[in-house]
Image 1 (cartoon, rainbow, N blue to C red):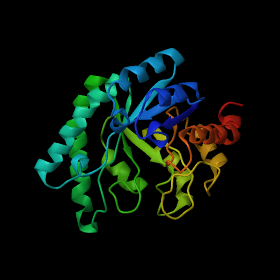
Image 2 (cartoon, rainbow, N blue to C red):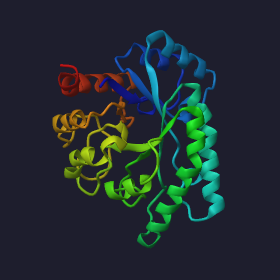
Image 3 (cartoon, one colour):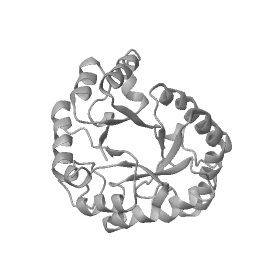
Image 4 (cartoon, helix red, strand yellow):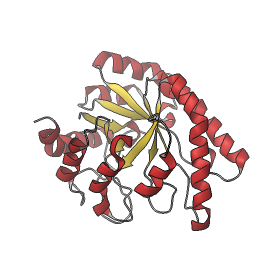
Length: 267
């Protein structure tokens, strides 16, 4: 597994110097999001960097919010969220992103709504499948924290039940707010449904998305679990934009991967 990272962890929006910094880095795969291309002229420049370096845009994160909540009980709002998602599939295709990451819900969900919300999310996946297939894309439903839909392995797997392998899981290592000890076992539980990752360290409280090596996650154990599961997807760092320069954030990610994971993944 090679080093990957979410571009939004380094830059709010892309500009030429930012693209140059990513191209010069040891990061090999990227997760994109629409907001980083506020300057639309940077789309061609980013693709040029990918061509010149042989790097890849592996995944694309759909925004999360009321306009993208595919679990909404109001059918008109749910259908609007599906339509908004479909509109962004074409943007992801501009960069040949093969994996689309999505949240199954937005905000905390009351217990008495959860079953209906899961059903609505499943209905949305059904409607998205033909659009994904037409573009050669797969959809990774993210494991979410707190009281969101898909906040535990069992519930997330129930959303995917009976769906094709067009659909899988994005495992976020910062979202085990109900027990960090459940992180490593979840790799085997997700099995072949696990198709991408959000990698960041965790202090066992609320999500902070700090650089691996600065928190409490057993990273060697997690890395070995991925190898045992024959995981072949992106190893994608998703860190917060801490008050240091983007260049220093890039170096901190590179140093973390080189120190912790490269000896395991690339012995």
